[in-house]
Length: 342
Ligand SMILES: Nc1ncnc2c1ncn2[C@@H]1O[C@H](COP(=O)(O)OP(=O)(O)O)[C@@H](O)[C@H]1O
Ligand SMILES: [Mg+2]
Image (cartoon, rainbow, N blue to C red):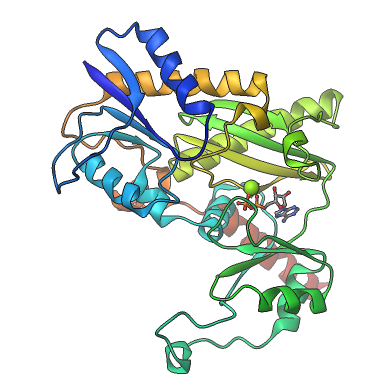
């Protein structure tokens, strides 16, 4: 009997629906799903789960360590707890650029306050005084948000330098991103499951939380079709690059171009009361199918995690080919040379 577990926190609707759906599909023979049960956690002792869906370890470091140990013992943890510990918004944006997925212009800012146990000397390598240059690069309005965060915490929309400094003063030891604000005509949130299945959901972030999914796509006709196809392509590229099994990608659309805003959400909201009945049904079904196929494929004692193309290429000694970026730089150089000649 292969067991599928779900590890979760305060959410109330998705975990039970997921367990019920898996058990309906498998009929409880050869495979069954349940809420993960944890008691004593000892190093190198495998769990009896073939698959664990992790919905909460971002908030519970004890669970993150439990899951890494479980993965070493052969559990297919969804999402990969090692990658989830490693990535953050700034790196993800950089990878997106390399993958050819448009993202807003973004800078990484040193934290306003020094981390505990550091002093002026810890920062001798840092030359950062030129805020004007940063504002010129990003422009206003801008967003400032934690480089590693979620749930809209400490996200600021800023219209000018005064607002920036007031907000920055509040950010303490958080490392923040300063990012161009995208003035969008359409906004989407897209589930991606198993690096294959994609559900594109129109989303209105300016609505109250419970009404954010109660909106429609504004781009219509051929442009709408093209936009949907482009977003699907970008969602797959990002998730295969990052190696997430269960994730959402947000896009803000400006001048017909979808810019990826937030795409490292390995425990994305899946509550029926926010995403709505139809989207909920889709995500429960897709997650159940994924868990079942991963449980079937799971080999006890082996590495059953998903690794993104970035890590696989690095581990295999093959440098990722930053074609787009280089091509762009080359174009820019050619343009400059041409301008000089003229
Ligand atoms: N560059 C941006 N342009 C326009 N809107 C943005 C931008 N960055 C963030 N937002 C808005 O702020 C919200 C929260 O930011 P996001 O990056 O998704 O952070 P979190 O990970 O906390 O959800 C987004 O859903 C979006 O509505
Ligand atoms: Mg978000």
